[in-house]
Image (cartoon, rainbow, N blue to C red; front, side, top):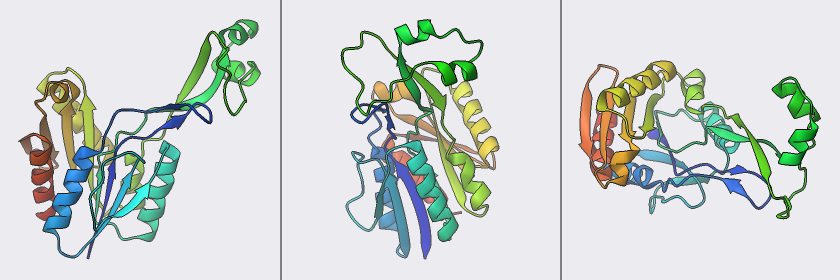
Length: 235
C-alpha cells in the first residue's frame, strides 16, 4: 500500500476570536492531484490535509482539517512520525507570517523603546478576545512562521517530497531559479513552479522540475496534476 499526504487550500492566522488573516487559495489543484492519484493507484491510503473551505476529493481520502500553520505543522509531524509516508505533496498556500500581537497607534507613541524585543515586552497590547471596533488605528505586528516543508525530510528522509513555488510577474528564468533554490534547500524531489500573473490571466502554465534537472511544462491545473501523478508513479 502506498501512503501519500497532500496538503491543499490555505492556512488562516487569528487576529482575535473573530478576525483572521488568510489567503484566496481554493485547493483546486490539490483536489485534482488527489483524484488522479485515487483513480490511478489501486492500493492507496491518501491523507488530504486542507483548510475548512478548501475543495476536496469526493471519496477514498482521509480528510484532515487544519487552520493555522502551527496546526498544520502538528498534523504533519504526527503523520510523518506514525505512518510510513511514501509521498508528500505540499500544494497548500501556507501563511508566511502569523500575528505576534496587536496594539494601537497611540500605544506605540507612548513606548520609548530601543529595539523590537524591548518594544514587544513593554508596549501595551490588546489582550481582549475581540478587539474593539472603536479603535481608529489598529496596529498588527506579525512574525515569521515555520516552513512546514522544511521538516518533512528531517523526520522522514525516504519520503518523496513535492514542493510548490508561487511567484508573481517574474520571468521564466527567475521562476525556475527560485524553484531550484527551494528544491535544494528542502531536499525536494520535485518542485512545481507557478506564476500568479499567468493564473490570473487564465493561462496557468507551470514548470515541473525534478532532481535530474529536467523541466517539464504543463498547461492548466488538470495537466499539472496528470503530469505530476505520472512522475510520482514512475518514481
